[in-house]
Image (tube, rainbow, N blue to C red; front, side):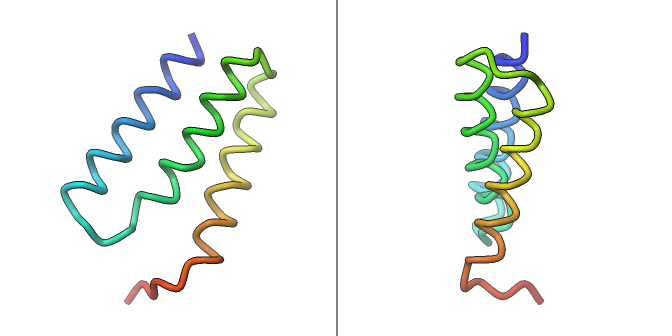
Length: 68
């Protein structure tokens, strides 16, 4: 069930990114992809969410895109 939820999140973030083209949601798409992979490997939900947050925040912080 978690795999489907992560897949929906990934697609949603990619669609939003495609609409906005401002690199706002691409970091979350990367995090959702890692969450999807963790779910496919039967990781516990807390680990999936932790990996999602770590990847998303790290990618956003390491990006050179300035918001505002």
